[in-house]
Length: 263
Ligand SMILES: [Zn+2]
Ligand SMILES: [Zn+2]
Ligand SMILES: [Zn+2]
Image 1 (tube, rainbow, N blue to C red):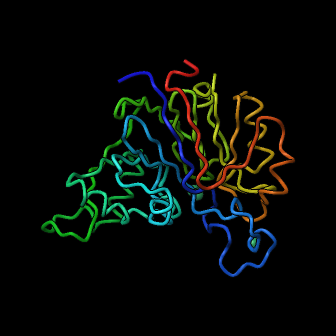
Image 2 (cartoon, protein in one colour; image 1 turned 120 degrees about the horizontal axis):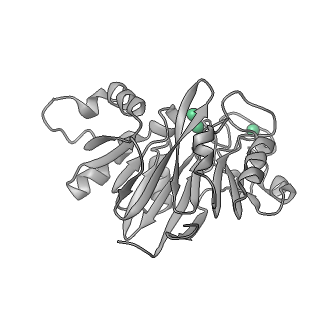
């Protein structure tokens, strides 16, 4: 399959605690602006009737109900931090309804950690209904998923690493604080850059807003969408202060792109 458009839905635009943060009474956490309610960071790619998740965030069930998602065909994992992975058990109804295992993709390190940390999903016990049926797939380079070209992009995430993904002229780079040169070379001619921009102050494992905007000005995408946002980012107040072409992600945001754009 080639041509056509694909859709990326921001399922969650929030940092690991989500926003509001439990117990916090700051202005953002008590705000009544819907865009200040941020579930844990993840996204959904839709193409040709197929749904591909990027990460199984802790809020996966809530996100699936909110977006009325009734099938998941594959999962791309960025890394194994709890906020991106620990909703994995919520894949159960999808594999149960389809009767098919769901392929889950990640780096070798990610797949090893998922199999270790969620042993009950992958052990040799006889089939039980109490686990999602998953097949792990190790990503070693660009691949095609139901007609969508997926380009994995290694990123620096503090002392660890994560994978970003490029799909056509869109790049999704969550959980990173530096971009290796080799990856940066593969981020030319972007239409949409979705990038980690945790907060205003610096952080050891995430870009802050000014660093993310610096990356954007180097790469020159038409549109930059800042995600993985914490509770010091107020959608109403701060979105208006961003430079032209930059915006704050919000839960439920939809971005549609031609699969051929930028090529
Ligand atoms: Zn995260
Ligand atoms: Zn707060
Ligand atoms: Zn992380």
